[in-house]
Length: 265
Image (cartoon, rainbow, N blue to C red; front, side, top):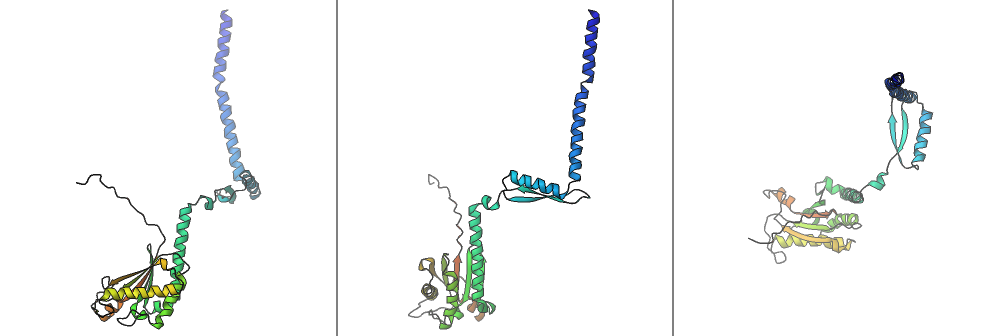
């Protein structure tokens, strides 16, 4: 009986001492497989990657692909095509809309500058663009006789060129009249308020007659209250006598709701 026990104990001890060989063999096998894969990658050629690329594309139902460049040291590069989501489907619709509006505004500003190119070069017209829209500033001497609000015949062609550009759009437009600080007191225009408003209205009437929707137009008269120069010289006063056409952006305003206290103190 004692001998049998000793024999079984020896067998168990022998088994426990050799169990590490199983884990070691598994590790060697995995390590060998790893080096085989590394060797296969290092010796890859274009035809192999072409087959792999086609297989991946077919597996993902030939969706749009993105190029992945795989480069190994001292070896030629290979290209794998991986499927990616289309930008058109993942883009935010509101962002696309906003981008299209911005492009349209830039195109409109460029068209206006081209239509008024000669006046822009002479410094009689300034065209600027901001987040609020496009501003076309026209010197009053181009449009009106002194102390008058009736458009000069030579100026009508200038305004028709602007109307031709904007009439196909749906942007709201503000036409602002501005004067210098020299007072005026006539039966028709008792002050610069009336003169500036009448000049803005004259421009609007021409726009309407040339196809611009009247619902988009607003006439505003500021008189001498918004100068762009100091009014100290004749040149400054000439600069302040102007008509500004504001083509408003279609970007929605960000409205912030302010909290209202329930009880007023």
